[in-house]
Each structure stands twice: as C-alpha cells, then as structure tokens.
Amino acid sequence: MQDTPALRGALRVVRALRERGFRALFAGGCVRDTVMGLQPRDYDIATDAGPDEVARLFPKTCEVGAQFGVVRVRLDGHDYEVARFRRDAAYADGRHPDRVIYSDEREDALRRDFTLNGMFYDPVEGRIIDYVGGQEDVRRRIIRAIGDPERRFAEDHLRLMRAVRFAARYHYAVEDATLAAVRRLNHEIVTVSRERVRDELLKTLTEGGAPLGVRMLIDLGLMRRILPEVCALTGVPQPKAFHPEGDVLIHTLIMLGLMRDPTPTLAMGVLLHDIGKPPTYEVTDRIRFNNHPKVGEKMSRGVCARLRLSSDETDQIAALVREHLQFMHVRDMRPSTLKRFLRQKGFEEHLKLHRLDCLASHGDLSNWTFCQEALDRLGPEEIRPEPLIDGHDLISLGYRPGPPFRRVLTAVEDAQLEGRVRSREEALALAREEFEKIQLSAISSQQSAKPEEQGFG
Image 1: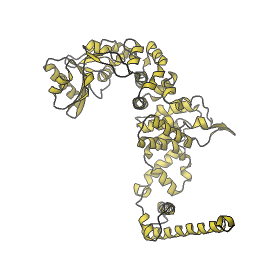
Image 2: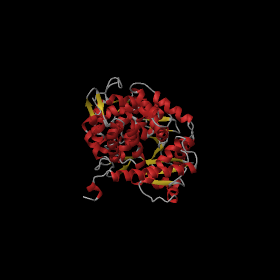
Image 3: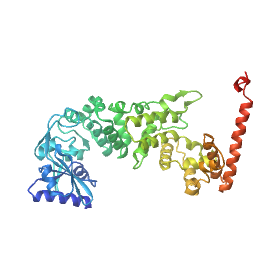
C-alpha cells in the first residue's frame, strides 16, 4: 500500500483500537485492491469493538448502521467505516439481515459477497488473512460467491449486478456456479430499489469494462429486467455505408469501450443515444431511422425517470440523445445557429459523444474538428455575448408583453450573434422593424381570411 494521508488515518484508527485491547483489521475493497496491486481509494476497518466503544475512542463519529455495528469515523478529513465482526441471520427483504450476531473475523468473512471482497489485512503484522480463498481467485482472475451462490444472492439481490460489475471492471471470469445462479435468479433484480439499481448500473458504465458489463447484463437476463430498451438494440441492422461495424448494439458497445473516465451523464448518453432506432427502423431506398433522435429523447426521459435520475441529469442525457445527429449540419448552420449549438449546457459531453459515435462507425471526425476549431476561434464573449436589449426595453418602447416578445428578442440576438447589430441603438431599431413585420403579417392574414371568418357571414 502506498503511503497516503488516507492510509495514515486508517492506521491511526487500527492502532487506537488495538491499544484498547481490540482486534482491528483492514477489510473489503482496500484489501482486494492491495492483493491486485492497485492503490486503494478508501479504507474500511473490521473490529470486535462495539459501536459505543468505537465512538468513545474518536471525537468525530457517526452511526451509519449502528444496528449492524457500523460507525463512521472522521479523522484528518477522511472517513473510515468501522464495522464490528458479525454473522447475519436470515434476509427477509432481500437486502437487510433480520438481525446480526456479533462474531469473529472468520464468520465475518464467510457472510460477505465474493471471495475477492472477503479478505482481511493486518496492517500491524503486514499480512493477508484469507478464510475464503480470495487470493487464489484473484490469481486465477475469478469472481466467485462465498459459499452457496444462491444464498449469497438471496441475502442481497443487488449482488446479481455486482458480480457483473466486478467481472467487467477487472476483466475477470465469473465462476460457473456463481454465473448459473445469476442467470437463474435474474428476475429478483426487480425487487431492488431503483436507486440502488441505478447506482450499480452507473458504476458498471463508468468504472471500466462498460461494454463487457453491458454485454453480460444482456446475456444473463438482467438487462431485460431493468432496461429492455437496450436489449432491443440487439440485431437491428444499420446501413453499411455509415456503420460498417454492425448492428446498433455492436455500435453502442464499441462506443462504450472507447470512453475514458466518463461522467455518469455521458455514459448514459452513449448507452441510450440510439434507443430510438428500433422503433423507427424501416427499409425504403436503404435502411432508415427517421426522427430517431426525437423518439430516443422521449424514451431516454422515461428511462431516467425509472432510474430516479435527477432533473439535471435527465435533461443532459435527453439532450445528448436529441442532439447527437446535429453535428451533421454544423458546417451549414447560420452563425447564430452554430453559436447557440456550441454554447448549450454541457456541450463538452456532446462533443465527446459525437467523437465516440464517429470512431465507432465511419471514422470521419471532420465535423468534430470543425466544432473544436470554432470553439477555439470564437471566445466565450462571441458565443454568449451580453444581450443588447431585454423585455423591459421593449415595454419602454410602448409594446405590450406577449408572445411576439420572444420572436423579436430572438431576431435581435440572431443579428447580434451574426454581427449585424453591435449597439443598443441598433438593437432597438431592429426591434421596431420586427414589431412592424409582425403587425403587417397580422393585417395581411386578417384581410386574406374568408368573409365568414372575419365575422361578416
């Protein structure tokens, strides 16, 4: 383990417990990462000290699961979960044990999910303590449930997805009995809260190995329980001129594999960007998916609602789906349209998704390059200048607030973005012209109406 502030704090926790006569070991993910030769991101500690005893030793603690013997210790800016050795009774709800029985480290290891997560490390003696064969499974690159796989999954049905996530993240194989249990029990994932499913899915998409994870979720029957829209991508053909790589699912998996440290919204945008293709598939002169971005936007909003994503996350994912084909038109856009396109919220993710889309299909990055060069050429003040006038100015001109205001202000902003107006006076003059056009258009429409429509018949 590399010496870090987080490690030094964890050692202080262990030593403080040992000085009081308690047993204390590093547990879980930090031990797994150490055995794999990776740097742990955080440290959990298992002990025979009770929550009250832990709380008395440290000034800053929080009981995050006191009924399970878990206390969070805050030390030098880092949080450490300190949990009492235990074994669990039955799990009636498929997540929480009905009760816990305080025990020793061996029984604590045997109640954990997978062997790679069931090891302890004694930082004082500098040795791994392994009751479950975790070291051997890491050496063989295997994900194996501890004990009976069905029992482990029955205790917490989210473990069905966790098996996939660990296999994808580390590119490990899932042991046969564990894999078979996931396949048999895939229907149980619907009993897990949508928030927990969402979090596990996002980890699968962002921690590494996303294409393998998605492929496994599909093959094991989990994806059709949580996102059947993604399963529908399978086998949907695409025009070879634009997509020589294959069907819609293959294209999506390639994009997922090209991601580097994606945000959750970008990862979901990639996963869902073409979900509008299956319902819009048709063959005319060639394979076509007319209006699939708009259809996909609506579908993606439904997916996000189902996964309980926030409004901001939903809006960004929906925008990524809706706008992903607009890059085809960037070189033909009016300057005002292009600037609005470039300044939309989260545009850096739009650029990344477009680049992935191109690399996973035809490979032509010319539109991506065009946008990058436009962003470099145009400063923020050109893309998003301060408005020359606003609605208060239109009221000052004597106009009554109403729907024409938006049309007039948009026309003025277009002219500003295109350099046709540069001052407040020019903007006000253009506003008057736009109102005159609206009034003339209304008069013309009234005169061309049929007599009965004018109220004479």
